[in-house]
Length: 102
Image 1 (tube, rainbow, N blue to C red):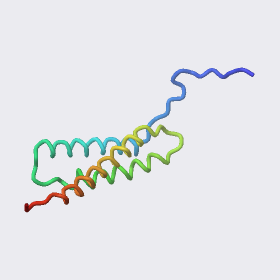
Image 2 (cartoon, rainbow, N blue to C red; image 1 turned 45 degrees about the horizontal axis):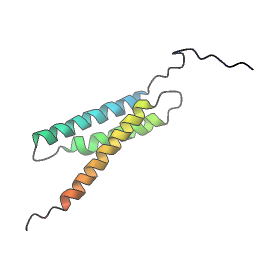
Image 3 (cartoon, one colour; image 1 turned 180 degrees about the vertical axis):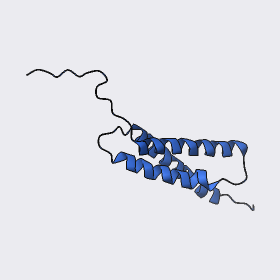
Image 4 (cartoon, one colour; image 1 turned 45 degrees about the vertical axis):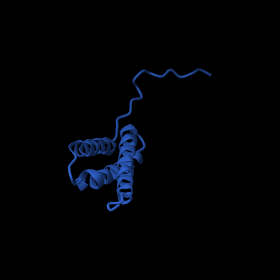
């Protein structure tokens, strides 16, 4: 028995389009959230908190079910979208615990 020789760079797999879009949308949503937190705007835009992470989550799940493509961007997009949704949930729950009147 002989061992097979792997060619360098011969087994590169292309990333999925939906995984890359999921990663890109998650980065845009994270940047928008950071800008609104740094500028201390009175109201957060719902686009950066809920709608874009949900689209990124959906595209990340679609990117995970592909078989012959690289899932790296899909994993990153999915994890960033989940982080943004959990951050939003924790931010809302912790803001409900504030006592406005002493």
